[in-house]
Image 1 (cartoon, rainbow, N blue to C red):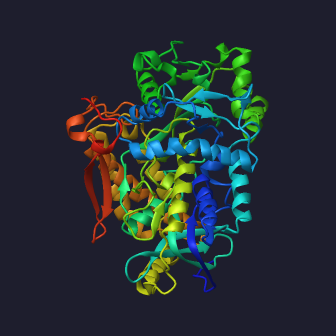
Image 2: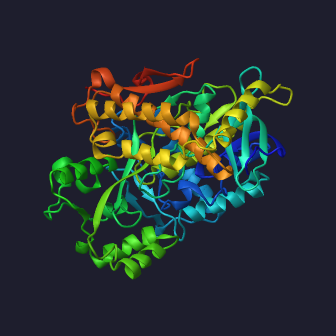
Length: 563
């Protein structure tokens, strides 16, 4: 493809859902149940792509006999008081019914003597993870796709949505995309839109990090607020391969050790120790390595056979992980459950998202947010992402369907649509411009050193910001593309550079440390007087980023800090 395609396809429905993971598929199922005509569009193949497909399958569930206050307090403390408590409580209150829905669809969860089996979620004292009996998250989302189709949801695969479209009154009226295989232009008109993409990242080192969620930034361009831009999900993984397990292994007794063969997490978190939150583990491991106490390992050699079998049952009995374990044994000469190997921090995704209320409605008329595109809390407890994406999808789909306003007679803003098309296709005209992959590599070199997004400081953040702004000014207007694939990469690269600028500016603003979610080595204590609040970003009239803070409404929450 060396020129813009003139082939167009028009698709109309009551509700348009962008993204085919847990959030998007639950939104589609619920919106259809509420009587709406529904279109779900995915840039790959809905139900078989994205973070959802690669997850282990554990899901945070509040069982009927559980104490909701204890579970909610786990979430509040793990998020250092910065979580929306109404949202978190709603996730918990709906979790058991969603589990029962999955079971009615054909995904049973593990039981022993009639009672559900569970493990504690990483970084918590009470929160429970329940596990599918003979399935992974891949099986769950694959089944949700089938359920959605059975509800007459129209699923449009392999269409990359690059922008939202508006009507003349400024309300959202759908989206515009391009066929990733056909290069045809696709106009998706709808009364309401649910953005349920990933939140994005910088193509880091961790599983599924290649996935780039442009949804929050399409919403940002349309006038929505971005919340929590300063936070990231930096995970930890083996240096030579990829497995899921840094959450479940410590839950069954495995310990982190440094190069001196010392368990080190009890120095940094005497209470939770090896079950600390992932950010605290990453920061602690980085500190040990910077002291010369590397490499960091997970002490699987001390596991009992009973522990190994429990891990296999919970985490690797199905899906892609057994294949990878066998490849490690065959090609690398070690067994991830038998031999201690080096682990290292691994960037996975950012934690920014679209601000939305308890009904998943944004400030922009006609726009709802679900999945990782919506803010669901900062701390990625094991099993929380599936539970929260499930809740947000179900909630957004229901409210979008029940509160939709007919858009059939609304006039599209043709001038805006034409401008968005022109901007998206511009890289095709830059034959000798910057290659998107090279720009991403330059961005990674700026962001991934340990003293930028892990052991943060004013000096490190300011230096990184200057480099990102220079990269933006020098390369963004001159990105080059020769086909649909690189055209999509160019759009994703623009999103990544925007996200980098936004996150660095917000991290500079937050002058404190909150050990479970945010660490600044130049300000190692929480500043509750000045920073017990949220950061939000809106797009100004001249395209500038406008930052503001919002006080957390503790007067309406169940738990209030006493400091």
